[in-house]
Amino acid sequence: QVQLVESGGGLVQPGGSLRLSCVATGSRSSIYVMGWYRQAPGKERELVATMASGGSRRYGEFVKGRFTISRDNGASTVYLQMTRLTPEDTAVYYCYGLNGLQFWGQGTQVTVSS
Image 1: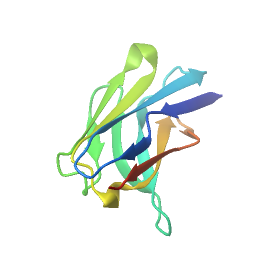
Image 2 (image 1 turned 90 degrees about the vertical axis):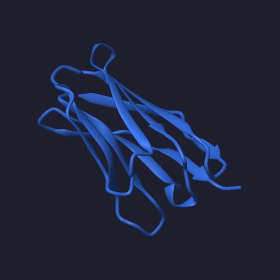
Image 3 (image 1 turned 120 degrees about the vertical axis):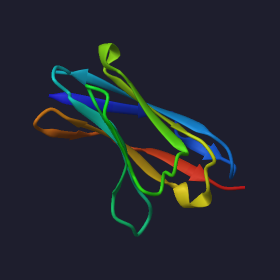
Image 4 (image 1 turned 180 degrees about the horizontal axis):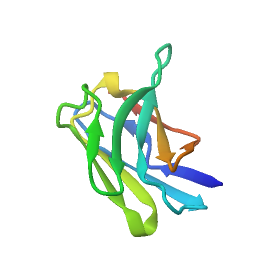
């Protein structure tokens, strides 16, 4: 069983930056994809970014170069550096892991507001 624990959410002003982190604990072997999804109130959960263990990355269309995903395979940790945040980025951000089964973190709130 894999547990994903997120950290780094919070309140930030428009135009600001945040860095999210997610650590996988438990049976961490062969987690070949890790990443982030988000869900805003009244909306469906959507892809933010994922990264495979080999280095390939996927980003949601709305990212437009503002976010960067990175991964420390040895530490089973994935990061999301977010810049130029807007109020539309306000959501609960969920860490995601895949090793044949899907795993989700509990979510961390990101609020972009002045």
